[in-house]
Amino acid sequence: MYIDQISIFLENRAGRILDITEIFGENNINIRALSLADTSDFGILRMIVDDVKRAVDVLKGKGFIVKQSKVVAVEVPDRPGGLASVLRVLAEKQINVEYMYAFFEQPKDKALLIFRFEDTDQAVQVLEKHGIPVLKKQTIGVR
Amino acid sequence: MIWNKEKEMLPENSKKAHQGELLKRLIRRVYDKIPFYQDRMDDAGIQPDLVSSIADIKRLPFTTKDDLRDNYPFGMFAVPMDHVTEIHTSSGTTGKPVIGGYTRGDIDVWSEVMARCLAASGTTEKDVVQNAYGYGLFTGGLGVHYGARRIGATVVPISGGNTKRQIMILQDFKSTILTCTPSYCLYLAEVGEQMGVDFSSLPLKAGNFGAEPWSNNMRKEIERRLSLLALDIYGLTEIIGPGVGNECEYKCGVHICDDHFYPEIIDPETSEVLPYGEVGELVITTLTREATPLLRYRTRDITRLIPGQCECGRTSIRMERIMGRTDDMLIVRGVNVFPSQIEEVLVNIEGVEPHYQIVLERDGALDELEIHVEMNERLISDEIKGLEQAERKIRDDIESMLGIKVGVRLVEPKTIARSEGKAKRVIDKRTL
Image 1 (cartoon, chains in turn orange, brown):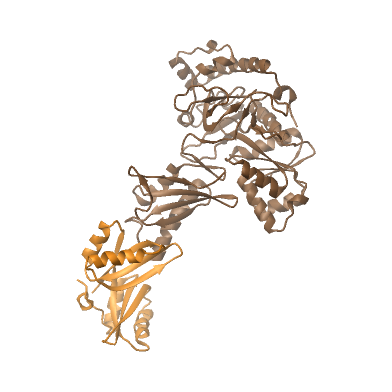
Image 2: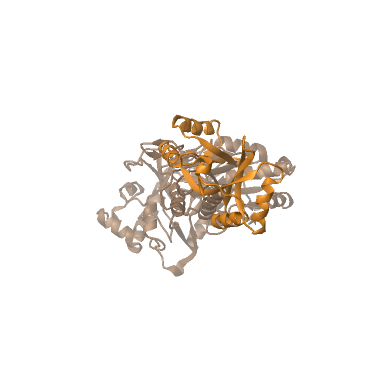
């Protein structure tokens, strides 16, 4: 039901994201989704990867500090109002979204949304009750 | 101007004799009244009557800051509490502060030596002294206050901070003498310039600046921007506070009031007394202090002594600008900061010893202290607000411990350079 997301702390310096992606490339780890949150001094790189355990081991081996957290993946139709239909359900139940990011999948005409909730369990219950499919790890190619 | 020509211009021989007499009395007093000194001297096999002249001082034991801490709060007092009229403490906040006790006689001496310091910058009863040193436990505010009052000048006890009001009062009260830390003075200049104040049109004529290290370049800048004579004042809580000495208008070293405070320079490693002119650690004996007298107090300040009569006429020994500290203490905006204090805060938050670095810069006029903390398992968050909270928590805790503003920056793991496994704790980029 939940997806394991990994987050890495990065200083705002040139080439830092490249370093991470190169490490993943060398170790044959595929990034399924990614988002970067930033302030003037630092950023947090959040990623969904196909092999979480190995990604964490590899990064830690390289001296990175990695945070793992549970996020929820939701698939919505890739059309106007698609995202709103999901958010409306959450807003009605006063469910707070900490952050989210999205990408679309071709050729399925679907958009994939990654949500980080304050209360993940409650959010999943509400989504499922309203018939909004919460994706399993396997569905998005995560081991 | 010389406040006390008799004492400040004593011929060398009569000064030595005078210092010797005072030392004899001092040694008797500390032996009889302070168990700490009695034990020290008994252990070293030194009887009080062994001292017959000032030259014998080199046989006496040293006193260190740790000794003062061990005897906190009143173990070093040589008089009963009903003779103590005032207490001050060091600005440092590492654990226990250093305590200075003052009798009426000590306050009298303090007023005298501070009057000498203020007179050296030209203060007379006609002057208005704007005293922007902090009033309170810190010795700066009241020390200057007593000296200005002794002279009969008009004291404006404005204390530190509130810069716009400082500038208003500087203009409206026609202050002629300014006393504060040199970095605050430059900050004052900056703010005043932004407000469109023409300092050269003000009656301000001189300032006694101290409580932190500064340089000749800074002096030139202060003098240029504020159109005044900027002189260095030296002192420390353990000895009396400000008033240990002050530069004269010839700016060739701080004249130490050596009829009250006897200075020596030692090799900080071997504790051997070094001849005049050599660089080492400054050691001071309080010849006349009643409440908290100290024998050969190791100041940890590095400097050298310059003997001989100055062009100004004073014969009091001079001390060059403080060149550094023997320990790792940092003086930031006049406040003593120890890396260990910052470490303590971080350990309390993290529960582990973090990797951190203290970066000191002088941004314009003010010292800027930024603490870089390496990311670790306990700090990491997937949310910006989590990291910002961590930064804020560290900053708030350090600020409340040090009492000064600091910056905190989270940095990537392993980015702080380490030598022999230990991170270099302090990067001081201030150019004095």
